[in-house]
Amino acid sequence: MNTSDSERLSSGFTNMGFESTDDMANADVVVLNTCVVRQSAEDTATGMLGRLGKRMKGNSDRMIAVMGCMVGPEQSELKRRFPYVDVWARPQEFEPILETAGMRHGLDPEGCLSGAVPENPNVASFIPIVHGCDKFCTFCIIPYRRGRENSRSPFEIIHEAEMMVARGVKDITLLGQNVDSYGHDLRPRIDLADLLEQVNDIDGLERVRFLTSHPNDMSIRILEAVRDLPKVCETINLPFQAGDDTILANMRRGYTIDQYLEKVALIKEMIPGVSLTTDLIVGFASETDEQFERSMDVLRAVEFEKVHISEYSYREGTFASRKMTDDVERAVKKARKVAVDELQRVIQSRNNATLVGQKYDVLVEGRKRDRLHGRNRGDKLIYLNVPDGLGVPVPQAGDIVLVEITDSSPFSLEADLPNVEARVIKEKVPVV
Ligand code: SF4
Image (cartoon, rainbow, N blue to C red; front, side, top):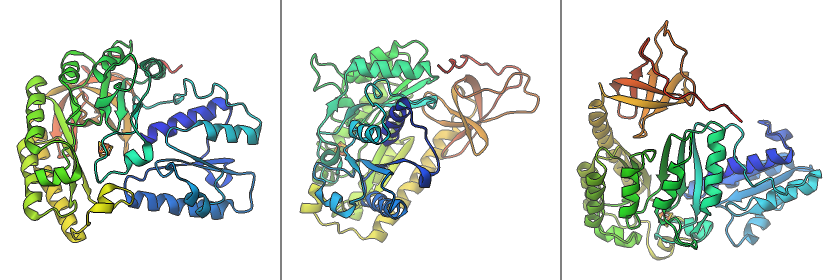
């Protein structure tokens, strides 16, 4: 979400006539986009701000703006601590930043944000479709910092998606803290399934995904859209957060683990071969060894493709920080995280090994550590080995090639580009 916000603001600056630089010391404008989902992230942001203040001291021409989740509705304490910051902007509040920069440099920001999409986007890019969250899980700061759910209009989203496709994007992930709730606040009311249908119709786009789902809001209609719409990929991230009902109730997640597992069974039944990933917190307030073991049981039962694990950390301002004690020792949290990592390594190794010999269309994304890589529809990272004397041009970012998997690890797959049969299915759309 933050990467997407930064790209959008950066594009607004480009439209105004600014150029980006890697040399922060000589920048006229520095924007710090902050994530504070964990206390450690907020500490990193405040540390950076302190260093920025020292660096910019005595240079009143430079402008510093801070945006993102660190900026809540109440900013007086931040303004007192960091008096040299020129603009404080809440998430997606791009206008005050552009207006202040425009006034300083005699540039007009009018219209610069509409159609603000990156000049050279990645072939796999993100579009935020709903901001904020109405769920108020007890451990989470997001609803307090990003506000209540606020859906963007489908017209705006489709326009942005079409512009991205015109610039070479082939794979779009629609983003929301709770993406399944998209549209409930719009009139006429639409839902994520309707939006997926519209995005699916965009010419030149190959793949559509969405992130992150809440088990209570993942409807049959959304699952039917994943099953029936050809461009919508069979990938679903469905956080369960804990495997024990008491912990789930203390987290105020709104479901029991049996209800969660019923939803997983429905997804697997409706979408055979679905790639399921999840989020899990270990060491939440008062979590016992026995309760943690229930999370491990869920991991063994579902066999997720990937698990995003967090050790619970006290987050000031949340319900949990006021009413619960962060009483699981740090070493215990760490040990639980290691246990989850080890279990997942075994599950992912075993599952990925079964994919050797399978053929997939891989969307080439570029090079990582000098190796060509891409993803299949199931979002598996696949490294492509390019043999000598390939006989056809080496695929470029944006090409889709059919490959056979030759090797696997817990975290990625490998495939050789076949010499003569390497089949470039789609040429990259020229950059506009
Ligand atoms: S649904 Fe997600 S973003 Fe919303 S409060 Fe819960 S954890 Fe936070």
